[in-house]
Image 1 (cartoon, rainbow, N blue to C red):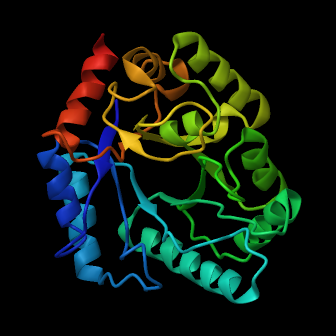
Image 2: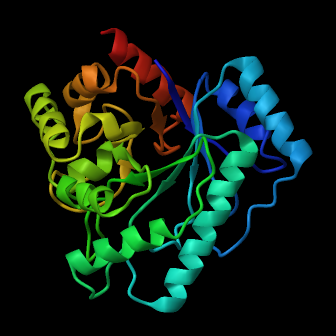
Amino acid sequence: MRVGAHTSIAGGVYNAVEEQLEYDGNCGQIFSHSPRVWQDPNIGDEEAGEFRSLSTEHGVGPWVIHSSYLVNLCTPKDDLREKSIDSMQKEVDAAATLGVPYVNVHLGAHTGAGVDGGLDNAASALEALDIPDGVTVLIESDAGSGTKLGGTFDELAGVLDRCDQPLDVCLDTAHMFAAGYDLSTAAGVDETFAAFDDQVGLEHLECVHLNDSKHGCGTNKDEHAHIGEGLIGEEGMRAFINHDAVADVPLVLETPTEDGKSFAWNIERVRELHEA
């Protein structure tokens, strides 16, 4: 099983590998720069080489780059659209430099363009990218608040269907739960994967953000909890982790650091539930 956490690149991107090892993780996710500002990745060849070397030496991978929170692919605003495309191009180029196979992105909010208009905008923005060989953009499922898209499997499928780029999907368990997919029981997990397979296709599932939820199913509230201790709970998390649909899919945690529990605690908990 590939399970790890989102780790920091402070002091050099290679430090993310060392941090991952401290958590006993064997895959992971990073930001290439601060996700809250428009900023270019600043990763030199030597730094990238060290990251690749350490990842290979310790068997840590696959890695995912999470795009900036400012990116909005669905926007009808020309200036934000251009900034989003430029930012995403730099992310996929950084992924190629680092040997990272995935760049994860939220679709964003349509802010009045409507669902179809927003999906059209997102697909055309993704079409504008020159994605290097060996890199795949993953569309992340969303909690679905406001005019944000990606909360339903139909919306995820809508972008994949509209776009000629070879896109795949990252499912976030807390987001799915908040968007109305009940993962709190084994039956609910089965139903959710069946719906995803029918509407999107399990062959498009390349990564999972594994998080429990502090809020109820269908609330559209995105706040993560420790594995098995939120409202998805132990039964749901156990069923999800052990489901055949994710047998070969990397599980990346974005759980909180609180109540004396860190990423290391949550990764150990995932392994315990996997073995149970």
